[in-house]
Length: 367
Image (cartoon, rainbow, N blue to C red; front, side, top):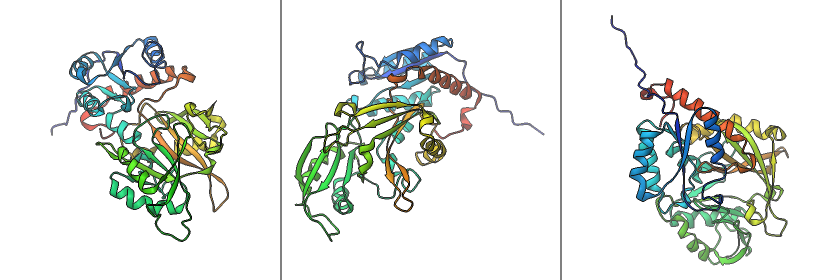
């Protein structure tokens, strides 16, 4: 009787990692690259590996692909897609690299799944997200459903792309809508943008038409969720290294009347905490990682990612509860705790070592 022999088709290690960045953006140091990329390179070098930064441009895509495929075992993507004129070329290049044996940190489809605003809706009904959350992909659905959801109270509408609070709007109906099951299109709204906490007044019709810009393009969408008053107490950002909480940032909005933004640009105050200061939140997040992973496509977890929470009150028990507002996985920074680079380097090498032991025709996760 014959025996089935499975030969590991992994390649020999080149011991080189490429970090992708994009030119421009507010997250760069004086020499054009991110301040927290060089520490990753230094930590890899201490472990006998080399690494380098490559700035991605569409016009150089073919050359960058060939160079990376020849030289590297893995890439680390530190690109904010919003800094690219067209992100599709970048994601396609990453997919080709992964298909041809380069370890993707993260896999491009995982980057999309975790980073898109609809990741929150895909988790609704879990311990992280309530049912009262919706995603809109076209104007007609936005118009029809948002008129109804606004009757429930103050809402937050978020565009899919953007950074530092741009395109995130707190929406409050000024007119009396008592007893209505749908807010009239001529109703007056008070609108506050998280970018700088400025306020505007528009009719619902005017605001909906203004939001068309956020629905355009292949990745156009908007997330609709209830506004949580306790955002004034602060947003809690959980920084993850794969499946472990490594740091927590408490971001308290400015004290001005309409402020709800948790960005530094808008005047929010940041406090950096060790995970042991938030034991309940750490237990919740780490315990939910398998659910998050399953709901968002069952990809390998991103190398570095964040989950942002706002406190709410459980109306049945009166206890605090944490509500997930956003996940980020594209280009998470850690400039305030650069010592994390050693942990990142260890995780990268552990992942590559594991990949070298597994036949990729029968991989642990769907790529």
